[in-house]
Image 1 (cartoon, rainbow, N blue to C red):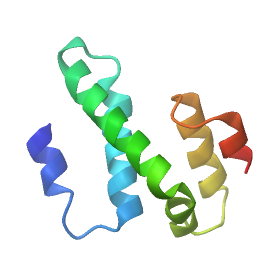
Image 2 (image 1 turned 180 degrees about the vertical axis):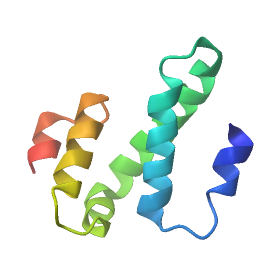
Image 3 (image 1 turned 45 degrees about the horizontal axis):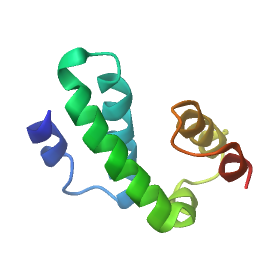
Image 4 (image 1 turned 135 degrees about the vertical axis):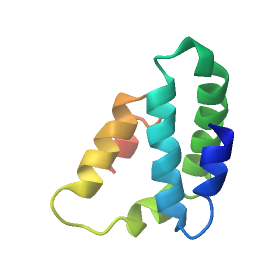
Length: 87
């Protein structure tokens, strides 16, 4: 998994890398063998959310509810608060 993540780090924007990490994080949640990776990814995602969440969200082009759906996904996985989701 680490090698796969490394392959996706080049040639993508910050938000694309964030979304890829988020998807891998969601997939890792249900597998006992990948819990360490899930913890590492969660820590990394939370650090990036704390650092420049507004900047990340601005990179998602508005339209067809992409931004709102992504915020709902982050909220459902416990990475953002309801207040941050609405704001």
